[in-house]
Image (cartoon, rainbow, N blue to C red; front, side, top):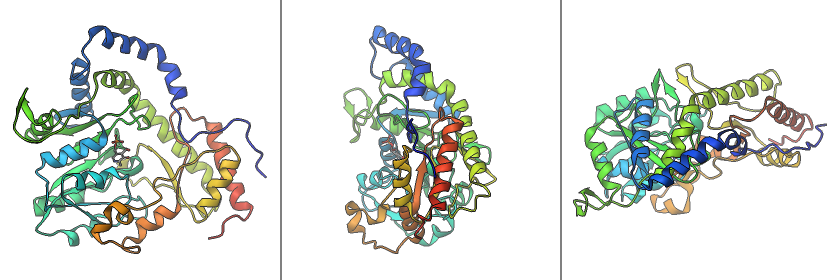
Length: 380
Ligand SMILES: Cc1ncc(COP(=O)(O)O)c(C=O)c1O
């Protein structure tokens, strides 16, 4: 029997990280206030250069969120009404929501059961004369299989927009994600590996035309102030958020390393236990940054409840695949269309994962899971 823990283990918390950075962050925020420049100032400009360099891209354009990064990248690639964009149904809503916002149609392709990322071998059969782009998502921090995706895109002259919202710092064959496709989209939502104190996002690209167009679209389609060439929107990264992000960026590599160590510890502790549990995989050619440490198991509902009773939080990313969302009903998909994505939605569970999580907390979490299965709760 696992004893109930006195201290709860959160899925995620920023409290521990903020404690260590508090003084530096407050000084930085104060200096932005003193300078009095709150929109598109020096911190945004510097962060754009720093993140672009980090992703191996030439340009970075700060925008209001990861969702807007996707939307504006699609617009900048010329995607609009009548077009189709291929993506995965097992991702956060914004990936496909951004496609629909442009007036284009999301076209879904099932995932690989091992990595939960889009299965490149299923893409080609979905390409039509209307297909304009592919959005691979590097889910949970694990890079999608980019080589075949880039090859297909080259063959059919399609744009590739990487949804790297969960994967800043991840690498595919030594190349940083975000910098591999035509554009890469980053989210600075507070829970991300590099998180702001509010919403924020960035488009990275080495294509000067895409860069120029996103830069214009984020300020209502104006290259020159008050002269509007096309319909854009107000979508800028705040100067205050950029300043906070620059303080945190210095720690990103070590935080990602710590996430990797925590993932190895989980793997090691689960190994040889013989549990009916699928662990996350890290294909040999990728560098995973474990935005989430996600396992897959039958009896997920019971397992999550069991952990909760013992003070251990866990989260389901995501309970409903996108092809079965009400907002996409008009696309005509039905249950059974994407079996692996649907199974993942029924069975995945993300365990506590953040850089400040202690080894002891990892151990307690694993112990609780072992005792769940030992107690015969698995009804699968
Ligand atoms: C895979 C994925 N795409 C897009 C987004 C959208 O980012 P944001 O929340 O910054 O709009 C997120 C983050 O929530 C995400 O996880």
